[in-house]
Length: 224
Image (cartoon, rainbow, N blue to C red; front, side, top):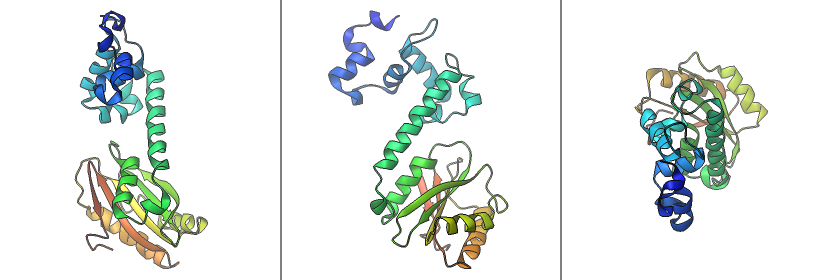
């Protein structure tokens, strides 16, 4: 059934205008974004199909290009749109995360890192370079893939820390498995980086693992 044939109060756009965005289901919000359906499915039905195929809204938006274009009803053009809106959301959330608040409060550091790392299906290792007031100078992805002690080169981290004139660094990476427990490789890598940075008087303040809705802190576990 075409959306235009639905009662006005059941059409996503009209429903949003009348009742606000929180009144819409995931599929209805997604239908507004998709705008049109495909042969045999209106926009809501296409949205429901995409969510069912990927299992959740988060998994849909975090799909790789290869996985996304395998879904019925979408292709490269829609993948580009999804990536653009996801990046806009991340930038919006980061903009609201003020430097002086984020990095003086551990929970806000976790919130900031969750924006960057939560839901990714591959491992990403990143560094937050901080000044002497623990305010963010720069965040930077150092490596994507399977993280181990050979993945990230301490020399390159030292060079970046000097370039940004950092006084401290917080390392972070995600565990797509959802297990927040640090691995042996995580501990070895952290120790290597900590030893290298201590030679130039730059302190490793923490190494945070983002795993699903949980975060684990090396500092809180006494591993630094």
